[in-house]
Length: 256
Image (cartoon, rainbow, N blue to C red; front, side, top):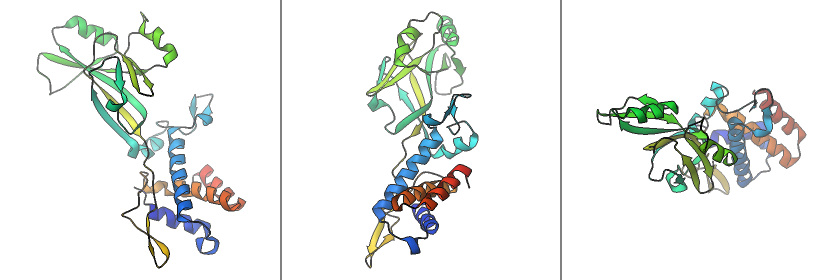
């Protein structure tokens, strides 16, 4: 995990702090937070950078293994037992959910219920080995597809496409299972990034790094240069120094 004090040391070295100086800790923490969230949004995929040939940004989650690995600290999952098969309220969803990457559901049926099993298989469900159910039952696993609200009615009433679907709203998820009620769903997702802070204690009228009040960003320490470059760019804008801005932009564009 990247350490905020290492980030500050690298930042101070790049801006030549002993000569330049001129920033407060509050300003530093603002640049740190902005850089942290900027890197996250870039790795997730900026809609402004979508390429028409691929329909994806040039940098986006799961486009390459490197980007996928960069976002690994934010990846989580949660199993949700269902009691309402039409709507999942927010208090059942992960509270730190930002972007779901995969949603699937499980259904447990008796092995002698061949009609239901075949219907579930026709919807794309596949049998899954499980040691936590009795021998006379079978567990089937199926994907839950995201559908926009303007397409919802057509999909629900479709005689050709029979797949489980969901659509997020402000207060929860609307869900639909075309064959039978699911027992639970599993959400794999990217969590909301925490807010990093360079914490300090005043000693002899100067701020001194305090690890107990600091919050480190989740990124691997190999990405410190990505964070610092974004901070240097904001610092250059703050002091109106084009050389800092150009230096930071060159590092961001080349990955150096």
